[in-house]
Image (tube, rainbow over all chains, first blue to last red; front, side):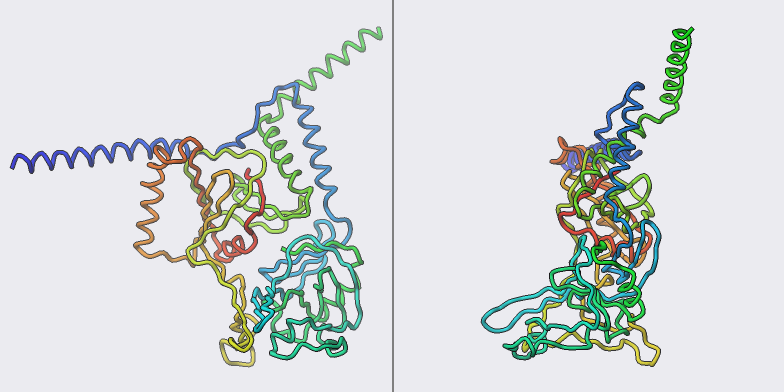
Amino acid sequence: MMIKRLLMAAAALAYLGFLAVLGASYFIGLKQASTWPATGSTQAISDKDVPKVDKNVQQLEKRMSAFQPKGLYIVIDTAENRLTLKNGDQVVRTAVVSCGSGVVLEEPGGKKRSWVFDTPRGEFSVKSKITNPYWVKPDWAFIEEGEMIPKTMEDRIEAGTLGDYALGFGQGFFIHGTLYTRLLGRNVTHGCVRVGDEDLKYLFKAVPIGAKIYIY
Amino acid sequence: MKKLAAFAALVAAGLIGLGWAAGVDKAALAKKQDSLTAEYGLAKEAKFYFVFDVLGRKIELRVRGMVLKTWPIEAMRFWGQPDFSGSVEMVKKTTLKSPERIVIKPGETEAPIVKPAAAGAASTSADYDLETLELRDMPKRFGLDLDNGLHVTVTAKTGNSMGFGARMKEAWRWYVRMPLMNLFGPKKDKGLSELELIIADEKDAQSIYWHLFDGIKGIIL
């Protein structure tokens, strides 16, 4: 009986102790969590340093704005499948597009090559503008269809698939037209950016070679 | 006379300078200088970076100083005293179930299926069930580990139904484990820092997962 009471008292004490520790740590935590801290490294500046700091801020802002593209540039959101043509902060035109499917293609047999069909992300520029482009089908296009890879270049060329215009932005990637307009807005491509006919025509005419492309 | 005028001009300039300095929020100016210096270092390179503007309640994806995407933060809570200086790097994204890429092996698996989810002539592209990796496949709750020790949990307010068990586990983590770790945890010397962000729109939460890739750098305001 005595042992039982002692055990109960010990358990109660342990429980109260746990609650006390928890309460204390929660209180400390709450105090810390009451305000979002100011940037950690910020040093207090004296009155005489204010003009200097202000000038530095202005210079930094000026340098930052110099990084921004001049003239028309293209912004592509691969998640939303949206293309925006911009000039500075002004939106010139928006278009629904199709970006990479994210699918992985693995080659059967000996070579065991693989391809990831992602639209590349980063800063690019328009490197070429082509009217009535032909698609030179790469190896993966044949592998995907379960066909033999041709030995001659002529057998790789396919007309009409890429629409009326194409804007190349390097590494074999293009902004081009599509036959599958019902799939615009979805991630279905092998990495290129497919655009509807009217939007593609507008882009092709408006955007000069060298214009920046930001794909994110 | 000239000396007097010069002296008066000097005094006036000094007074204007003092008055101007007194009118300036020095802490805000210093903070702006710090954040701009950190951002300038990131904007120099042609790479995307994020800005966690916690007080401004928004996350931004930027490149070259331009804002590409903004996600509003509905609510936030945090533990610890995070110390942010300069830029940070996102070490990894963590989630219960990572979205998986579909692997096609010709001859072994079939090509991606394109089939309408609902019959009818007026079907749109959104109705098609595609075997591809899209925004809708991204998680609505995930963690972001930053190299300064800050762990950020992003949760969509809607469309992220948690069971009773998961809620209890979450309550235990936030209200018991966190305070205890804050006091006794292994990170005590470094300082525990845990930030939880609630995003109103589930699509926005998924979009954050999509756009913030491992290794991306950023700044926290």
